[in-house]
Image: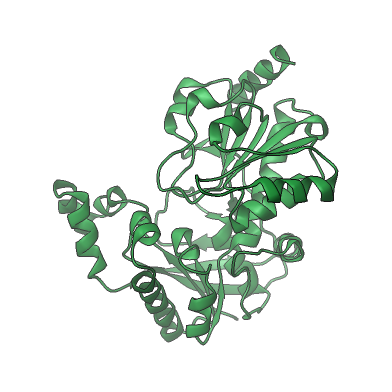
Length: 359
């Protein structure tokens, strides 16, 4: 058996306040709380048990908690953030893990896990390859369910300049009719759009704002590294499907509250084979995990302890390989979820109706 570990962290101060032993932080200014948490050392959060592959292989692991919030990991001094992440990896090594996955914003600090991998004696992955595979699969499946003709559809990727965004573009481009690329200010996507257009022989547009991209798109993949919501109700066309892979979310909750004619789904929710128990509540029903977590489990079941999904250039070969390995071991895309709730047939019907009305 190949044990693994996975690094998690609070997305916000509100996440910290939800923990019983830190209830008092809700009464303190957020910046104070973040400064206090920055003084903490990483710690073991829980043990993960019960994972059993369709092949009969088993594995077990641990969640290791990095005390930094998403904002700290994005805006804080890179070297200090990397040091915390490396400390998490060192805890994983002492526990006996042979592979560690970097969750949420620990995967984007610095060079996308490369420096962390160099400083550890075990394999490291960001989980991005399986995240990409399941996000695109989920978005296309949802689009078909609400009556979108994928081959004739216009799609947008928000966060197109990032490693996940670039790979999502390469998976989407052969299946849709048109692409719109958007990223944070300061990223010129013109050359990238021209390159993708030439390679796949479809129109690809570089946008200077998220709003410009989304007003055209029937299918949206949201994969940015923004620390606040950047997709709002007025931006989306009726009948659109939005797959939000980002954590914190790219999509504002107001979209769900104000736009019943739009389908928002969470990207990367995967059913784990076996009687898995995470001994920790990260907001999913039993046996479901994020795809980045699942990638680490899949590699452990496959006894792959080499580095995987590192850096800013995720190869499509890796995306396709981890997708095939996931199927081999019995991992599968979970039912569609939206802000911690299962998507209902009534929701799908409303979005189908919106598509029929706007054909």
